[in-house]
Image 1 (spheres, one colour):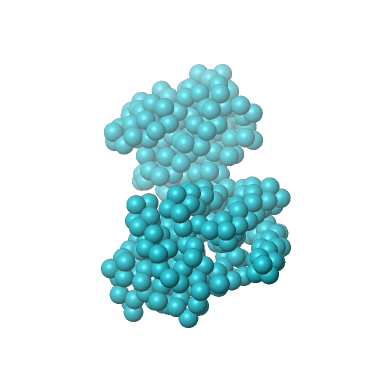
Image 2 (image 1 turned 90 degrees about the horizontal axis):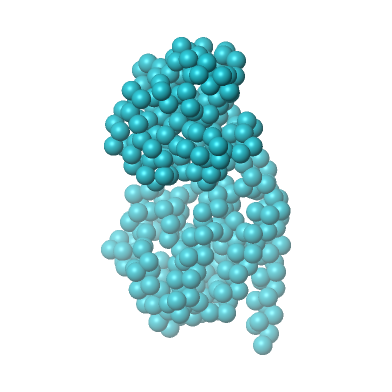
Length: 341
């Protein structure tokens, strides 16, 4: 018996190709059961996310690995000759190492991201429900899950954010111990503002106001975070009550001037304001930074922190790989012990 993995990911295939090979839960169940009924395959598991589609299986003869790859492509109506160069395959200990690296976020587009572990667990539960997980794959994925937990606990792989919006929100910790009595004004309605709003809500901030030219777009984000939408015309009034201001709008002229902030500070009796300008060109007049009680970060500041955090994660990945190496050896030793019976 041999352990095998085949698939494509963000390293081997573009998004348009990955989309063609992705499978939803219902399709995954059909594919799993078809594969499990094949004489060569004893156990099988499928993982499909926006960045990868992978099959893990136990098979009797490695000579037929290409046949399984071609079969999977045909199931998706794709000609094998056009996509075979995007596919990769691993066997035995290389499969174990790959599975553990995936679960730990070491093979992700963003090093150390944690979402993949939840997706891995959901896919494992789906395969278990389909009855296609046996002793060997069950043991492998339990190793993967426990290794991911160990890596996240014992290294700094997930300690620092690699998203501009995440970093912008995480910096609030330097200014406020508790956000439950704070108000945030977010200007814009794109993905960056959406992520920032969700992160602020996780920090239990008191109020979130979303201001945008098109108030309907602002309302979409506001509804997601139990916030309130307002127009850009209302923004000057909202400045007075805002402890946090994050702006990410495409605009040729600044939306927030020095005079508006001076007025807001006077109204606030000079309670400080944490501001982040992620606009290109900038949304906040540069002179605002010189005002007392204003802490203004620009895109350059935030990107520098993202790069620093990336370096930290890269360094942590070295420590994480040592943990993975040890766990790979443990699993392979377990397999050898099973073959003795």
